[in-house]
Amino acid sequence: MVGKLIVFEGVEGCGKTTQLQKTYLWLQDKFSNQKILTTREPGDTELGLGLRQLLLSLKNQQPIYPAAELLLYAADRAQHVQEVLLPGLATDTIILCDRYTDSTIAYQGYGRDLPRAIIDQLNLFATNGLESDLTIWLDIDVELSLPRTRLRGTSDRIEQADLAFHKRVQHGYNQLAQAFPHRIKRVDASLDEQAVQGQIRAILQQHII
Image 1: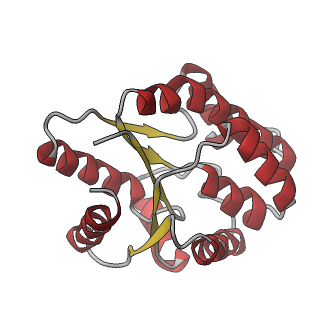
Image 2: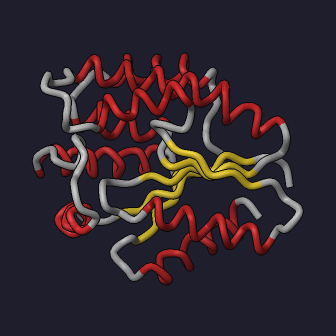
Image 3: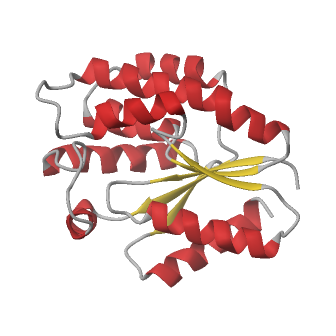
């Protein structure tokens, strides 16, 4: 199998990180000779780790304004694409990525109400045009997903945003899924973990494998 970029997206507490790991183990078992990599945005490069701490930490006393937040995410992505994604795809690796360009549109576009045209330009510049081969969107109402984040202990800066923000983000994902049905595939994330994983495997069987 040639290299593929498979992205996992969704609101806070949707279970994407758990499902990404389950998918990784399943693919490893199914394709023992295939290189498979898990990665995330922000924070899977040395530069990105520092940016992740800036973006998500609650220790920062000064607010991060929306435009600055957008640019920090773009910087992380530019580094991530060059250092991790493009080299991986060049060696025919299946890459499972926790968040990518759709997150920026949903969170900074719909959530922060920043101009979509600017976000699209930044995404294009940061990625050098690299799009996901498939995006798994774990769809769940934020009223159900947000309480899950509290079970993990302390919440990060994004998770602690108000409910209205998270509802705008969820609406953004809905709009993206309607606009790009060939690339973004919806999974009902309100079900139990095994049922969610079953949906993901079915999608991968149909569109990738």
